[in-house]
Length: 420
Ligand code: ADP
Ligand code: ASP
Ligand code: MG
Image (cartoon, rainbow, N blue to C red; front, side):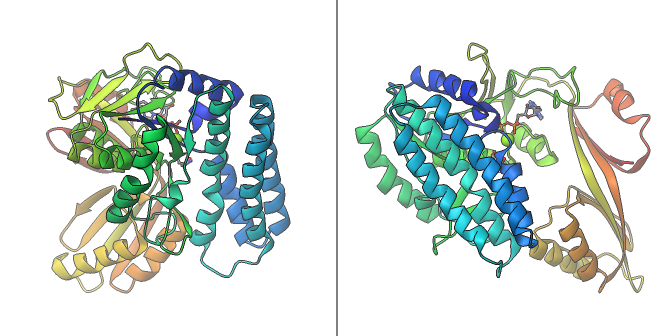
């Protein structure tokens, strides 16, 4: 059995969906679990709906949602004839679920509403793709992943309940594979024991696909992208980026952890644990070999460049000149844990430390409040974090020499710098 994952870019419009169907058509003789994201930039659009709703701009939220509805209905209209009515009925049910909620007043936390609203993106896209596959006579089974992928109730960053999910996948999905070769489901979303929708964190569909690959011991997982494969840098920022034919799990998990946007950082572990190869293939040119990621030793790599913008540098100092030892560190990590803040870079001194984190204003504000009980807290925003792996003189010179650096760290393989 194989697992495929198509991201938002691969299902962004009518032509792209037709193209996805062609790729699937070529593999329809094998057992295939297909995980799909929301279409194009739908998740961003739904985030705006959630924000408006929560901040009391109900009319505006409904208007934005109505635009999203129209986009999906238009695509369904262009793609479908025989399957049109069934698909519209399913889309309408999904629209209604969200509209009911939007007509209410928010009484729970923001993240809860975010997940109830944003999760519809994947349900809509997969409904349309499933109907289109049927339209072109590719038999498939559409599954609401919320019946399978169980999580806790940390809305927006839900943690997967592997035991429940494995059991549900084996009892509900495996029998379906007796009847059909293709199962189509959503990435990024799951649900709690109370049947409330959850999401796994932005770009989390890669992770969903890896979860299923792990559970089913898949032969491999193919993530279809709009790039040749994994490159040594983001081609949108560094047009001279070079294609990498092979990488090992350890390299990719580091790249993703430091912020390379090509693969979600949680994707690698479930694959590595079962030694399942990850293939990153070009959606636009299926003949290209793509990048293979597995446990094999990688050949010498060129410098790998990862840029993360929007960093906040937090500088902490103990209030009474005590050393940064067990107790202050424990307090600090408690705060990180409570707020789910992930430090990107930490540098420790005698009585202080500096930490670069993604600037999510609500989290940074809450952090400032909690940490100021124990530390003097300074925060500088609007910074960038550049990570260079496998660096050499030339790459250091090219990417870092002229930067106004505020923090830098270096080991044999990796240089990281926070700069203004
Ligand atoms: P999808 O959501 O469709 O799966 P994304 O847009 O999230 O795809 O990811 C693909 C994009 O990731 C590419 O278009 C590319 O600009 C970007 N990217 C960032 N870093 C890399 C990298 N190291 N190699 C390849 N692509 C990268
Ligand atoms: N649709 C979600 C997002 O845009 C999940 C994903 O694409 O992986 O973040
Ligand atoms: Mg994406």
